[in-house]
Length: 394
Image 1: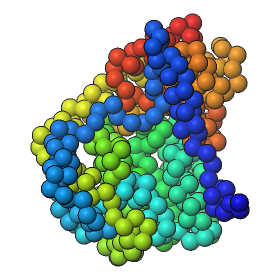
Image 2 (image 1 turned 180 degrees about the vertical axis):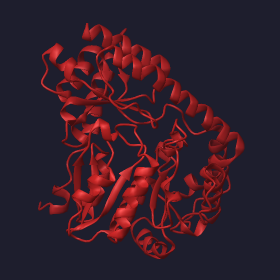
Image 3 (image 1 turned 30 degrees about the horizontal axis):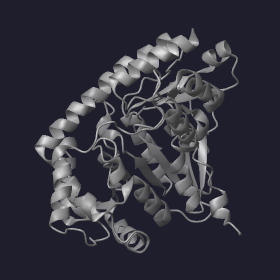
Image 4 (image 1 turned 90 degrees about the vertical axis):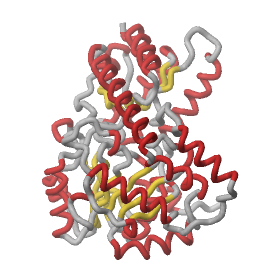
């Protein structure tokens, strides 16, 4: 069977390949005194709050299961608009908000709407692998720009200006970032956007972890810059609805009909039941619970990152959001006689029964010496993982 060149360009999702190996070993050790601790997948251990679950059950009972508009339930778009007003003090009209089948669908729609064959999109290295593959799927090319800890593993205005070429279409950023948990300084983001705008380009910002910011300085949406910014968001992380596959995007008014046309043909509409359930995310009781959970995620970070540092697993940039720790394992590899983070991840999995993610997925700039830990698991699980790592590295 002949496979399309487009499909051939998409690399394996190594996060999931490692996850399969971890799950298989996890089943084998499930009933031992050392069951697998999973710190490899970025998924909150919290599930949808009671009001959200009740709203879903009500929607099922009332038969609210038919198609919605391709852009989403008007009531949900209004709720999201009100959330921007209450959380960020911004007036984002509901007409600019498009509800999507997860942030993944939003990124795909944005890339298909804006990228022509051969266009280049600038992204930091390291960055979330699927984002560059959305660019590839639109027949564009993701240009990964190596970043350092001094740059918070984020693009800077100087890097964007130096890398901009005749085929550059724009930038795709993430703040906070997966895998580093670091955000772009607001002033730096403003300078980047000014450069992009001056060249007629597009600024896309993945903000799915933005509500999980722990530092007010960084916890600002890029939408505050101007109406030209395209923001991608999700109900998966802060709102704890990963499997519900629901997200949204905020786009300029002129782009809404284009996105709607693509969404009608590619997705019909997001999940109707998930949309009705998501209406309850914005109730005061749900928001209070989400904020308590955000505080718990921060407490986990505050425990786990210093604990990693004490083991010689350096985290050069303290994560200011999300639930990840991007740790340099080169000293640990040298101690254990291992080649790189890929080998280290499997050694930790097989010997300590802790599943983590090697840096291979996230780019090529020094990623062979980094691993990503997810701190989305319980404090008890994190403490167990540290104890096992301490024994392994001793």
